[in-house]
Figure 1: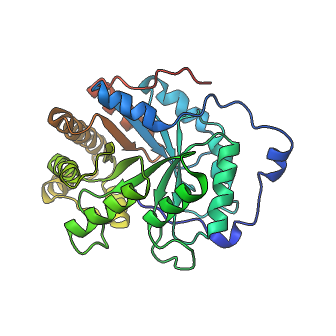
Figure 2 (figure 1 turned 90 degrees about the vertical axis):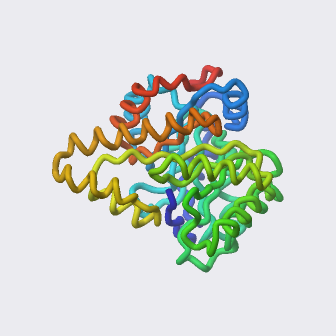
Length: 320
């Protein structure tokens, strides 16, 4: 999903300084570049899943509830539920409690060169080596990065290959792109700048995912592409999320939800069944073996999806 960026004027506040200077952070297990996991799973045609979370003060609770799903990685946004934090490094502190395969969001808009270098050097101190580079809130024009590709280029220039970089793709086209070809051109620019893999925005038609990945391959984009899946759990929340992300709700889904009305259990079952159907069809097509689930910190839908798909996921390295 698209996210607003951290308020850059607060970057100078450094809540981790004392912690890092007083000694090494607690053991998180081996830092793992996600490309090593994704490429192996893809080569062996093994299905895998990953979960996106908002920062939470008790990540171990979510991890415990979803442990049997063995996600290939967790993706952490910068902040909780769209609220800009008072401490910009709070997500880094939370990420320290996750295993070494965590993927940390970093939004380009509003950040200065020095901000990014400082944030990523701190990430390395915490053995975080996977970064999800996003454009961020387009209303923030006071940073040094206009596009996500600019941030990818900067990271590669300063840090070389120390980070594994993920970027976003848009099966329905980025809302600011004038055309599909234009959108794919900029996606390829992000890959050419040094991105290692792609996670897509969610949509609700499996045909769009499949065609998007095929179009990317025709254009010469060869990096792994992981479809982003949003399980519908609530009609009102769906309308809010799709409005924020500028994604389309097909009329047949709108009609189905309208008939279900306030029957929340029916809506949840419909959302889970739809997500399973989308993933099954993508799996049949052979264009992708990974599925990135936007959880909104709710474990129940992704566990149900996992159970229905019987996804064999996780990593082959034991981590603490």
